[in-house]
Amino acid sequence: MKIIREPAVSGLFYDEDPLKLRAQIALLFDDLPEISHPIELRGLILPHAGYIYSGRVAAAGISLIEPNSGFKRIFLIGSSHRMGFDGASIYLGTAFRTPLGEVKVDTSTAEQLALSSPFFAFNPMAHEKEHALEVQLPLLQYHLNQPFNIIPILIGTRDPATCKEMAQVLKPWFTPENLFIISTDFSHYPTYDDAVATDRETANAILKNDPDSLLKTLELHKSKHIEGLTTSLCGWSAVLTMLYITTECNNIAFENVLYENSGDTPIGDKSSVVGYHAIMAVNKHAADFSLSVANRKELLVRARASITSYFDGTATDDLPVSETPSLQKPAGAFVSLYKAGKLAGCIGHIGEDEPLWRVVDRCARAAAFDDNRFRPLQKEKLPDATIEISVLTPPVKVNSVEEIIPGKHGIIVKSEHGHGTFLPQVAERMNWDRLEMLRRCARDKAGIGVDGWKNADIYIYEAIVIKEES
Image 1 (cartoon, one colour):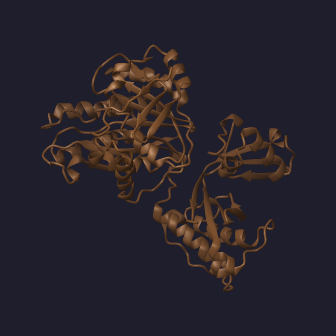
Image 2 (cartoon, helix red, strand yellow; image 1 turned 90 degrees about the horizontal axis):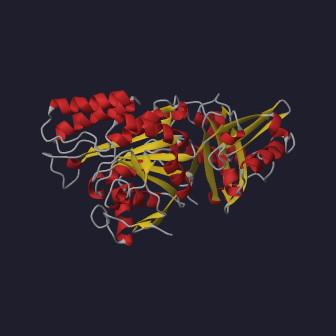
């Protein structure tokens, strides 16, 4: 039987008319500051108030999700505002409805979790009027380019030990193919200045990725008896559960995205505010490398300038040096050219032995003129060509090919007899599964036969894809 969870705060926290809601959300995303995008996003902590108050901060976090990322599931976890109960309520209905349409629940995974522990059950009343999970959905629907499945979880317990037990159940699902979104606001009702100070301390405790540090900070805030403060983290049990998962993951780091409070809004009262913070959980091995919007634009400008200057006889070594720190870091990259939507050249460099800007300069020109699969680009055709740059994360050797997620990971097949690679978007574009991707890379790129991958070293990487407008 189809069970749909109807919206509870449509018309209150956000507009109930679909067209007006899209316009409302568009303004939030259009008003964001410049934010550096992570290479590998694993989780987000986002606020859940009315969009007029916290929507900009929530949109800042959600903007970090690549619109075509295709996460298999989004675990949406919050703390119940309206009732307390043991453990957590995992929604076992089929979908959540918003003015923008239905969002499907991954009922198979939800049922599996419900059967795996007495701490997970389905309490329909807990979800009925709760806003913490619902308000994230229209923002996700607006930003993501393809349908997504959710695992909605409301935590009712106030026992840290229970949160730790639930984290152990959820931990096997904390993988690169899934995204965890934790829904919480920060301080409630202190003055503006007290909120800023309190929220900074709470955020710093989260950034340490240490559950005990968070609990001690929350207790410290209670002991201070700050005027007006009723809580410094309304979704503390959800955040704590996340930290119990990530503290045992050596590759996870938390980073600030954006902080504001209700006093920063045009209708805010600075004598009594609520704090809103967006924080991201990332693969810390890739966290040192991120690209802002300005960085991405600079790379596209450099790629086109490198190709254009070829017609003037300028060597790539004579092009201006980039002074941008993020682009001076060594990284691999591929540059692809498209004409009328069809590939017209693609050359890349995987090694981390050159600064990114130089790799892009060199590969852009090589893609235009040195890819022997295509005719060299003619000067009069340059204005009609579009450029796509794929900036690569450091390759990591896999222990099992089961770690490969087609569409998310690029692969390198490497043996003593040859090596080759496919970018992440190749498998997505060709609709290949893992085996097809491996077989074709071994045969067509490494030249070691369709089964050569079985005796080769396999590496994976991800790509930040930057495209020119057509």
